[in-house]
Length: 311
Image 1: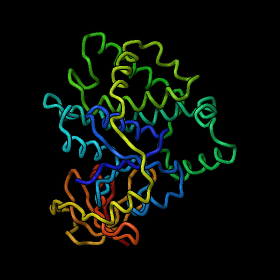
Image 2: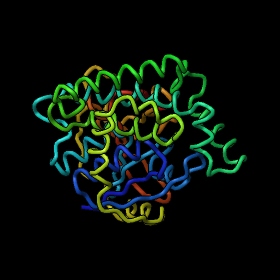
Image 3: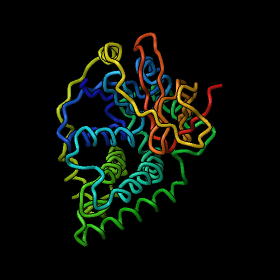
Image 4: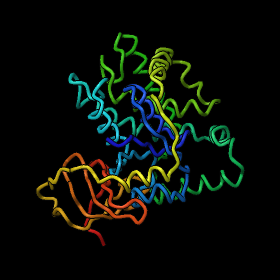
């Protein structure tokens, strides 16, 4: 099997989520360091327009969104399971809430002026301006990743308080007694807040949550090596896409082989165009051609993405 390649950057919270999954599973992987803002020509050669971070590549198959990336990693390396048999639905539903609603609260809280100053201290004023403009463009005319600060702080305190009580009762993990994807989805939220050092004191009132965080952090990131983007593009070009499921969900109004576009429904609404290969309640797969990467299959989770006939 081709190598696992994660297109990521060091300060990306969702990249940290996947890095920790790779560490928990003891996997060996390659990292391509991508820019945190546009332009991202090497990444877009593989995704066709999807710009969120991270993206996972295995040969000529490109996996978008950590919800799907973690599914794929769990199939490749089932131990420890991310979706334990005792709570498979609960862990997924909790992870979706933590990745969505709680992440919005975490971003709002951490990106207060004091947090921005600390997290972007390594950038020049011009780079800070470019970063903020890029994130504003990602949000577009929506309120995605933004809520009033008092509500964000209240949500964090309530969530942390309930987790503190749960851990005090002897429950070791976020979704129950077993490690699950929900643990990794909570982890990257707290990891992000901790980067805003002056604001990280919000965690101090919840010592058992901090103990849980340290246990999770101990998984590390597995065995990785950094490779240049040219290596990843060459890897796609020299491999054929993997065999794919040809199921098309009845009632979708679409058929295999249709020209379609796939677009996130919340933010960074950059459409990816291609030929529809798979459309189920779980996954969308399209085939696209790129002058540099050749034929690639680009995979998305079904939830959170709009699939429609290409214009």
